[in-house]
Length: 198
Image (cartoon, rainbow, N blue to C red; front, top):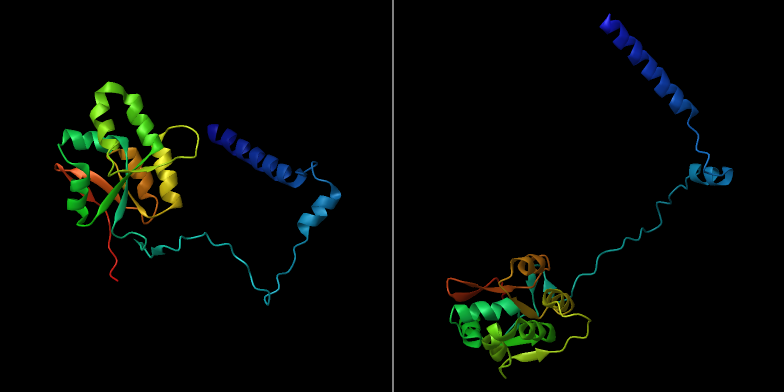
């Protein structure tokens, strides 16, 4: 008995679906629009097809960034200075030991603003950031969120190495081709820089 009901239901469903498909009519379109959609133009094989290609920076040589070279300009993040103090590392000297070349640490206005907001607990980091060996980069955007500022600056100019310990910022910068990251591991600086032979 249950099998009979099942077969009847299946037959009724099939009829309903077939009728629904046959009587389905789109009333929202006008006659002119329907006529336009039905006509397809034949493509001329002699016409050259134009395709838009994503712009690629001219400084890139495959995965290598040709703009990177000594002296290295290194964008320093807030937490990188704090972790350097905890590991008792001199920022400029440790950078030179890592890359075996002259390094110019750069600090943006956003990073300085973050260090000033952190208060008296991080006054040593603020004093290190105000060192005359550090280049100060002005910011023209609104807000003082340093991560967005660093990512935006690195996307515009690929001549920087980003020094950070922040996982989220590292993840964002790894998605940008040709931008190396400097980080702290085993109480010394390490870098993901790749060299291209001249």
